[in-house]
Amino acid sequence: MKYLKTRFQWIRWAVHIGALLPLVVLIVDALSNHLTFNPIQAATQRTGDTAIILLGLSLACSPISTYLNWKDAVRLRRTLGLYTFIYAAIHLWLFVGADYGYQFNYIVPEFLQKYYLWVGLPAFIILLALAATSFRGAMRWLGKRWKRLHRLIYLGAILAMLHLALVIKGDALRLSGDAWKPLLAGIIIGTLLILRVPRLRRALLSLRHKPVAPAAVQLASPPAESTLVKN
Amino acid sequence: MSTNWKPDKIRSSDITPEAVYLNRRQFMKGAAVFAAGAVLAACAPQIAPQAPTPLPAEVGAMAGQKDELGDPLTVYAAVTGYNNYYEFTQSKEGVAGLAHDFKTRPWTVAVGGLVNKPHTYDIDELIKRFPVQERIYRLRCVEGWSMVIPWRGFPLKQLLAEVEPTNAAKYVRFQTILDPQQMPGQSDPSFPWPYTEGLRMDEAQNDLTLLTTGVYGQDLLPQNGAPIRIVTPWKYGFKSVKAIVKIDLVADQPSTLWPLTAPDEYGFYANVNPNVPHPRWSQSTERRIGDADRRPTLLFNGYADQVASMYAGMDLHANF
Image (tube, rainbow over all chains, first blue to last red; front, top):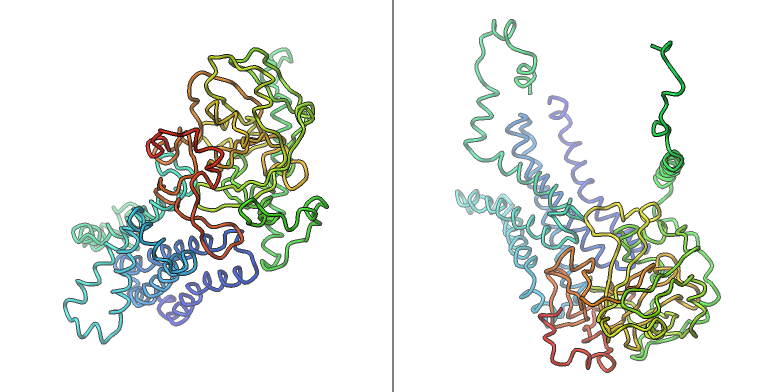
C-alpha cells in the first residue's frame, strides 16, 4: 500500500496511457486497414467494449478504497469516468455519424425498434450529465445535490450492461458467441455495485475491524482469519 | 506387485486406440504450432502489410463486372476473407485460415428421401453432370451487411428433376458434413449440428436457387462452402447452406439450425425483408462491404420479380 501511495503520480500516468491506448490502437488499425472488412462495425464494438471496461474500473475505485484501504483509488475515479464518457461518445458518434451518416430517416425507425437503443441512449445521457458536472465548479454549485446526481452512475451501469446483453451476437442462456461479455461484465460490475450496499459494507468492514484480544491473535486465531485481518 | 504381472491381463481396451494416439500427436503438433504462432504474432508489428498472395487469373478476368442493378462485385479479398461459417469459427476473419486444409475429396452427396431415383453422387460426377452457369448474386447477411458475388453452378431444379421427387415431397432438406475433426466449431454444443437447412419445393425449384460449385471463376474455396453449396439470393445468407453431403426430399417443413437455436430471431423462410425487423441488426438498411454509406435493403433482396409470386397471400411478418 505504501508503495502505491508514493507512486501515485506514476499510477495516474499509467491510467491515462492505459485509457488512451485502445483509441490509439483503433486509429492505427483504421488507418492501416486492419479493422476487418466491416470497419465501422468493428470500431463500434471496440469502443463499446472499452467504455464498459473503463466503467467497471471507475466503479472499482471506491470499493478498492473502502475494502483494500487504498484511499488514493478514489482520486482516479473522475479520470476513469471521463474516459468512459469519451469512449461512449465516440461509440455513439460511430453509430450516428460514421455508420448512419446522420440520416435520421434511417436512425429514428431503428431507435423505435431496438431495445438495445432504448437502454443505450439513457446510459449515454447519464454519462453526459455526469461528465458535464464533473468539475469543481459544478460540484460547488450543486452542493449536496451533486452526490445524488452522481449516484445515477449505478443506473447508468445497469443500463449499459443491458445494452451490451441485448446487442451482442450469441445466446446468454447457451453461453454461445459473445455471451461471455455481458455475463463477465455483469458479474464484475454487479459485484462492484453490491459492495456499495451500506448494510453489506458495514458487515464486511466490521469483520475486518473486529477487536481481537492480543492473546487470542497469538494463540487461538487460525491462520485463515489472520490473513483476513491483514487484508 | 510386479511379480504377479501377466501379459495376458492386458485387455485390448487398455491399449490406446490408434485414432486416439494419432489425435494426441495432432494435438501436440497443433499446440506447438499455436505456441510458435503466438510468439511470432507477439513479435511481428501489427501494422506490417500482409504477404500479398497473387490473385488467380480468373479473378482478374472478372474485374469491372456488375450485378443487374449496376453494383460492382465485392472485392475477392472480402469474398474469401470475411465469411460466416460457424463450423470453423464465429470470427468471420478467422474462417479462411481454419478452413484452408479442409478436405473436399473424396466427397459424395446423397440425394434421397421421397424420390423415385435416389442416388449418391460423387462430387466430381455431380459437378460435370449439368452445364455450369455464371451468376452474379447479391448476398444479404442477416447481420446487416451485404456483398455482390460471382458464383458458378447449376439450378437445383435440374438435379431434383433427375431424382424424380414423389408427390408426397413438399420440402427439400440439406445437410452440411458433420466432421468436428476438421470443423472445430462443431464441437460447440450450443448448436444442433450438423447444419441443416431447408426450402419449400417451389423455392427449391425456382430458377434462382443455385447448386453452387464455384466462385469468382474458380472452384469454391473451403471458406465459401466447398465443394458444393446452395445459394438462394433472395433469402438471408444463412439459408445458403455450405459443404452439403445430403439432400433429402421430405413431406414436412424441416427443423433448421437457426430457427432451432433462436426461434424469435430467425424463421424458416428468412426472406430478405426490410419491413420485418430483427432485435439487433437493421433489416431496413444494409452496408455493402467496401461502401462508406448504408443503403436501403430491397424486398427479397431485389429479386421480387422472380420470387414474390411464390409468397402471394402469405403473411410475411408471421412467416419471417
